[in-house]
Amino acid sequence: MEFSIPAYVERVLNRLEENGFSAYIVGGSVRDMLLGKTPSDYDVATDALPEEIEEVFGEYKTIEVGKKFGTIVVVQEEGNIEVTTFRQDGEYLDGRRPEQVFFSKNLKDDLSRRDFTINAMAYNKNTGIIDYFNGAEDLKNSIIKTVGSPEDRFKEDYLRIIRAVRFATQLGFSIEENTFNACKLYSKFLSNISMERIQEEFFKILLAKKPSIGIRLLKDIGALEVFLPELMDAVGFIQHNPHHEMDVFEHTMCVIDRVEPILHLRLAALFHDIGKPHTLTIDEKGIGHFYGHDKLGAKMAKTILKKLKASNEIVEKVSLLIDRHMTQHANLKAKGLKRLLDRMGEEEIFTLLKLQKADRSCSNRDAKIDDLIEREEKIKEILDKKEPYSKKHLAIKGDDLIKLGYNEGKRIGEILDYLLKRVLENPDLNEKEKLIQIAKEQFEISEK
Image 1 (spheres, rainbow, N blue to C red):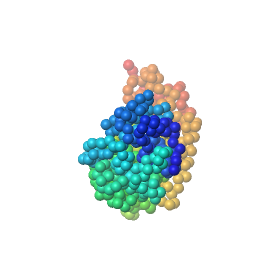
Image 2: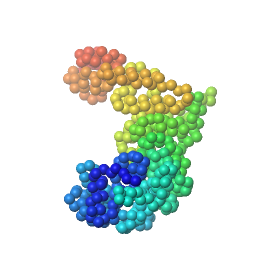
Image 3: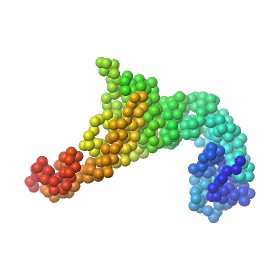
Image 4: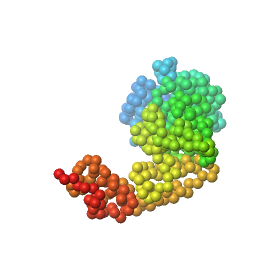
């Protein structure tokens, strides 16, 4: 089997071979090529030592990203290539990285230390595919399986447990039975892994085509209990409400699968009802209500995302979406829509609608989203007509009010808030002279 390899990758392979070294494309790039996908990047493994790699590519810019671990980056205009010396890992004592790395002249040594069989293949045009661990067969059978003993692989780095789930989710594969059982056995040790590393894999799961596959797997192996226990309260939590056919967890799984793979939208979908198990009240008719679950959910999501080391931007965007997701049930007229638009912004207002449409459509089989589609059109109309909806759109500014004689500070804000209220009711009032007249009629100018 021969693959079409980009010229800048072939250049690296050929240069190493011309200098008497063996060189192969390895890992995920081989997996992707066998799946008929174009790899996002290419990693090269070689029997050349790091100093020899630098010498071979002396006329190129190289970067020592991990020289002690054997990795040198060869910089080219078309893209960077990580070139790594064949290696064997020493003993793992911290469940994350080996205490020592030993360089090797044997490709099999290098492939033996990799996590899963589908990531432990090598290729070059002279030898074709080298597959010591039947990775191609597992790829054909849609199986995630560790190289060698799953217990040994996971004890080396417990993050591989979440990586198994991530690959299963992204590829739509199943996890081989022994590997799955080892995931369950060792998932409790994920508490030893830094949250930054967990977050990176977890967010990739959320951005997969069907993220619910990964969330369910994380639940089944016990990983959610370790790094996201708040979500476990939703499992099996009956809503006692005729508008909801599913428990909170199943409803959430439906919603995350229906929204687009935008990270903060998927996170908002995952956490939008996380406050429900803590706000349930049952009325005299036996119907469940969740008053304030949106506000509590936004607060809980902030705490969870900070624990997950998410960026401040993600934290704020997600909490705002959750805080406002129940506005779908409000009968908002033009004024109310403009206030919501002011709060959300011109981009996030449509992200909110995406969340609301998925939330509604996952509530019960008879759910309709016609009103949300109509709301979307009204918001587009407001924007197309450039109707004012924020203080920044007012034809009068704070400086204008100060020139009129109003005192700086809180009073200026109160006047602008009032003027915005009037303009939201009647956009025709948004002219400077009209607004000055309204301000003078409603607010006295303090005498100096």
